[in-house]
Image (tube, rainbow, N blue to C red; front, side):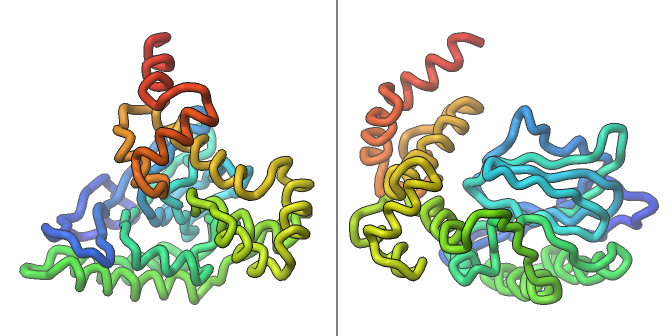
Length: 285
């Protein structure tokens, strides 16, 4: 696929090699011209990673963590799989983007190493005049005959390295302490929170478990274990409000051990089964 000239930007989809790989894969890539973005009224949980590169226009990004950031040409948005978010142009403005969607355990390693930092999902990269030629190399690779998904994933990680090492993330911590933000990053990724795991989080935050639990509860309004589960259930409710998902699909998407654990937790925290919740929401439409 040839990336269109900036002056004649158009929507197009790249050919992705067939097949997948257990380490990870690129699932979708392309360009969008004159995008309306994703409205804040219908914030989206995407279910996989994505990089959005703004080529022209100005707009904003916001997510369920309360992050609100301006977006300008040359900026990159990193979409987190489980994070409800929205982005798009300013009223009456333009939004031309290039995007790549990807998933797999190898990208969770990037998150664990804190290269993917949920606190700063928008950051500056290169100007479109300089960035698009580098991205063209990757899009050309996608169309190469006989290329395998493992090779595509490897090349995509090389490009991600260019993205994330040139402009390190800028932290937007506000008045919340660093240990609390570190705990949120960990807890929001883990649905199964037993005593051993919670103690490990406390150790990562540099404090004993009881001190960690008390301080976390004072700031968040609930203990860390319940916070982690409640965040997962909130996301499952958001997904069910938008579409029909099986318990197995929701369990896999949200990181539960299995569909039975998910369904039991959902009913305990909402008073309804996932099916009942879905039916209740859609019967009123």
